[in-house]
Length: 391
Image (cartoon, rainbow, N blue to C red; front, side, top):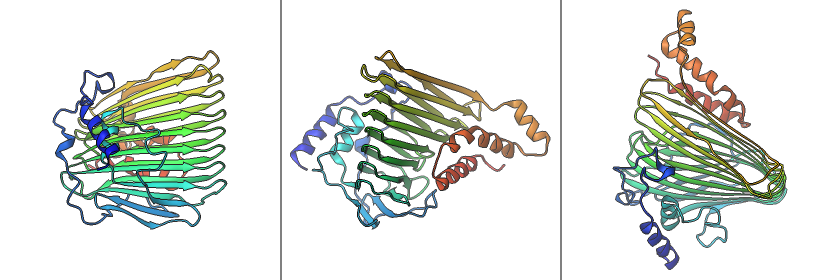
């Protein structure tokens, strides 16, 4: 381990372990979890479990405990293993947070994506991150550079080799969207129900650039996903669309941050989730508008649908506005299935499961309509409906 890595590891060890006395962890209890009890040893090859998505892609990378394999890469772009000495590594995701520091100290297999100025990719780039070692840990890092006026889509999917694999995954993603570029970024988490998953995703969007982000959460046991967008240049826009479904005793936690640094910027964060059985979810959002960020237009919302009496969700929206010519709004709702709607559908011959499936489809319809990439939109709709048992 290099001296720099050793210093970061010591920082990780010195940082206090999160507990519910800390505001950002108030609803996510990590008792019983010891990240140092998991090991990255044991895998001999990159595993390729099934995918939720059926895509025609321009480039494919597979990541596992054993390493990273670039299976296909488009000519003229950088799609290669990430080096620890890249000047932008840790520029956005630092080492001030416990799990970000753990990733910074121990990641070995990362991916660098750079699309040159003016290049437009017609097909997406796809990255599969596969956890395959029982009691194993997998640290992944992604760095994306969309140079000015480039346009492309990048899809990453987190999967497990088996549905009950006990593991610990930790990801850090840094996105740089250059002037007048457009990046569509899709991140789907479908890990096993026994995997602890932590992730820090941070983007910087420059002048007149556009970031269209889709976050899907369906797997894992417990953890936290952080999503931050910095609107750094005038005219920058960011849209984040989140959809999640938890059942059993799953616990999903999303912590989002919209940082408006420049004038005439726009952000739109919309998250919807459905919860069954004893599942729980937390969404915490913050819009911050800096003093020079006049003419900001920012919105955030979180809506939760409870499909059982024991399911529970917490929504905590927030605003911190330091400018005086802005438009910032937020909303959060929590509700159970409308009993009259359920009765109406069942009275017309549908089973309860079929009726709930239709209600879930309607609940997520406006969120799915925000997704530009049709195969992703279709796949997410199917997986959301499939979480309702057939009987």
